[in-house]
Length: 201
Image 1: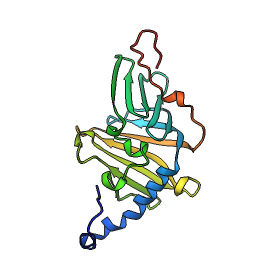
Image 2 (image 1 turned 90 degrees about the horizontal axis):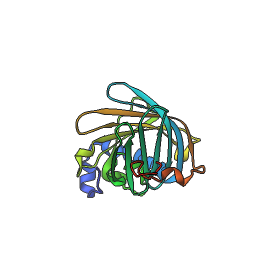
Image 3 (image 1 turned 180 degrees about the vertical axis):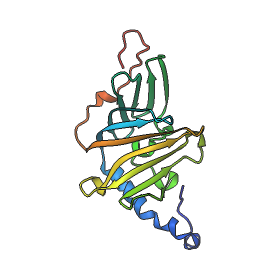
Image 4 (image 1 turned 120 degrees about the vertical axis):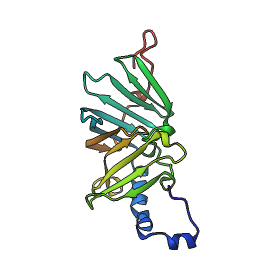
């Protein structure tokens, strides 16, 4: 969280804080330059179990995680709400997109300086952005990884992210085969609860 500060305060800030403005601005440029994205993903939970699938995203607010066959989860963001459906127990959870740990990625108009900061990366070709809502610590912390790639929008490639929830559980998503700004069917982001008679999700 970095709000615009008085010049006197800024001059007293530690050098690492001042130095991160440029990469954070670059991340913001990337997010604004990407209207759609598709990718393959591998998701790993805190126990090390991995599942795969395909990701479709259309800004603002639309996202779908289509998991591999046999995984009972479906995650769909329709632009307003994010729905998580577990078909094994017929349980559906739904909350506003803005409360999602991925709201930074889904809303390019969001002021990153209010909710995110650049953190040290193990590779100089990588930018790590740590995002959290200080007003809602229960949403946890999401660390998003970008790699520098001249062929990608604003010179950055979204590589994946890890999420640490309020209970200390960590999960990670790694992306491959990223494709930007191509056609993505809006029907992917429509959600009709399978719990309704005759409905399909």
